[in-house]
Amino acid sequence: MKFSVEAQELNEALAVVSKALSPNAENQIMKGVFMSAFGNELYLKCSDSSVQIETLIPAMVEEDGAAVLPGRLTVDLIRRMRGSRVNMETADSNSVKVEMGKSRSMLQYLDASTYPKMDDVRGDVSFKIKQRVFRSMIKQTVFSCSVEEGKAVLRGVLMEFTDDGLLNLIALDGFRLAKRSEKVSISGTARNAIVPARTMSDIANIISDTDDEVDITISATHITVDLGKTKVKARLIKGEYINYRNILSRKSNSRVIVDRAEFLKSLEVVWLIAKDLNNNVVRLDFDDGLMNMSARSEAGSVNESVEVNITGTPTDIAFNAQYLMDIAKAVDDDTIALNFNTSVTPCIAEPVQGEAYYYLVLPIRLMRN
Image (cartoon, rainbow, N blue to C red):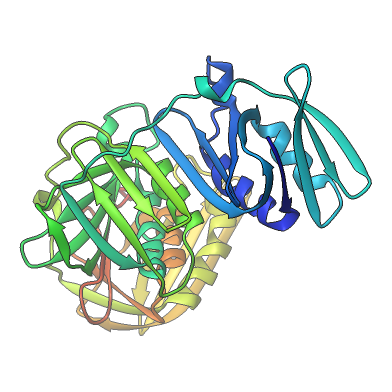
């Protein structure tokens, strides 16, 4: 194997594929980055057996060949070496010579033929969607996935296809629920899928904030996200997702419309005190066109107010401040509608108009004197 490649392109490619590196893998080869030079391209991939990320970049190839280089070391080395172009060449003793600018390094490599392969899986359903739209859908839901070791399906995002042509992404952890919807046109037979939260986050970090389309294919066991030169293949989580529709509600006694940016700024101030409590408690009360937010801990107390448009008579209520901040950070709208019933029933956050997103947050029971 002998090739030359632009340093920036190699750095960007390594940054993408290394998201699938498995530092704790028992099999040493799974800690490496697979490189194969052929024709006028360099193919790179990493895998942890549950997810594989691969990409192609242009290269000047003098000798075809493949090798598996130490993953994290290769990523860090190429990032820190100085020069505009990288030259790599296999040498004796299972080593690869790496040259960039005035830097010279030797890296030991493993036999590429022993690197595990994740085969392409024929999907039951496929669709195209703008990258920026799918990226926003993921970022607006994935934070609500469970991080506990309990039910495996809650550590993933449900991709649900409805009869009226909607793609819903749903995530919940027992205390909150996030739902994001977009119209899509599918090919094949609709099949819901539960995608690991980590995989979804990786996809969101790889795809761009553009109108370019991404091809997504889902089978009974895998999802493939195809960006052309870059592909992500991942195993799905097995099992039946919770019937989340049983906990959805559109009924409310009061509706509060708040400026999202101002809401977030006030929450960030209150959170500085609330975070000293076990559950980040922020208390909300409403008076004369204001939403008052307060928190108290051994370190001190804080009060913030933001102007709101109130319909009905909202009740005093308390929440985990982090959960409300996550919603305010995720949403792009200028304003958010918050819907309340009682102090012990969930708050529903949704658009002022439309149904693009839906957030449900359980309250924290207030202690009365």
